[in-house]
Figure 1 (tube, rainbow, N blue to C red):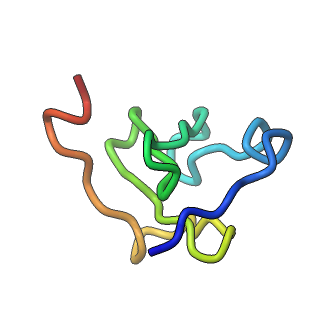
Figure 2 (figure 1 turned 30 degrees about the horizontal axis):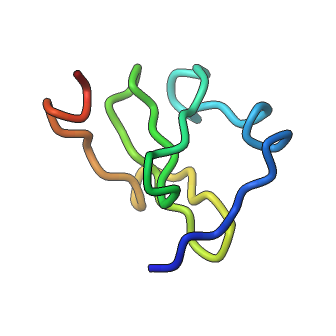
Figure 3 (figure 1 turned 135 degrees about the vertical axis):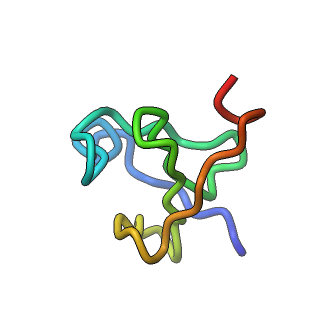
Amino acid sequence: MENHNIDPKMLEMLVCPFTKTRLELSADGKELQSFAARLAFPIEKGVPLLVLDSARHLTEEELR
């Protein structure tokens, strides 16, 4: 999966679709993470996929 840049202004506007809390860009830039929901949403071709079917659960290590 390639690392695609997300516009910082768009990132400020995006929230978790479940908790309505802020999303954080992962260190590798490939996911948006919702620590409140304990989910990570993939970014494909620069587009965040903010649906449960695409999300993965964050590990305990990632939540620390």
